[in-house]
Image (cartoon, rainbow, N blue to C red):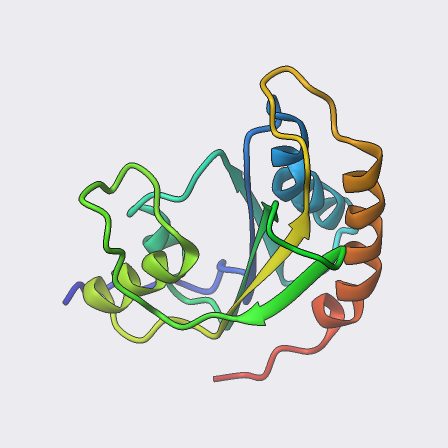
Length: 158
């Protein structure tokens, strides 16, 4: 296993917004992340990317909590938040990983992954060049309002 020292400069909470801002409601992850970054919460670092890669496992080093945010076309409700467990990705490519696969990579490379959650926000239209739909914008607002207390909750010291 790798021996990595995150140092004292690492924020205890990492938020990763996943999605393509040029593909309509796929922008929900990055949009949510941008809103969270604008809150200026102490101890929170925000990243955005089009998709998760093996390298994102190293972004988890030294974190106490991680929140992945992504759009989902499979939700009935406006949003859903659930804890994640590390799981090996069954695909033959590392071109794009699920959040659980990033946790698995972290465990294989570094050791136990920090407690992590997925915030899925309902989207309906993912075509290239489209703007965020009105329904997705409403789901985004509801999700952000609901998770704000979670984001502001103190993170226990290890």
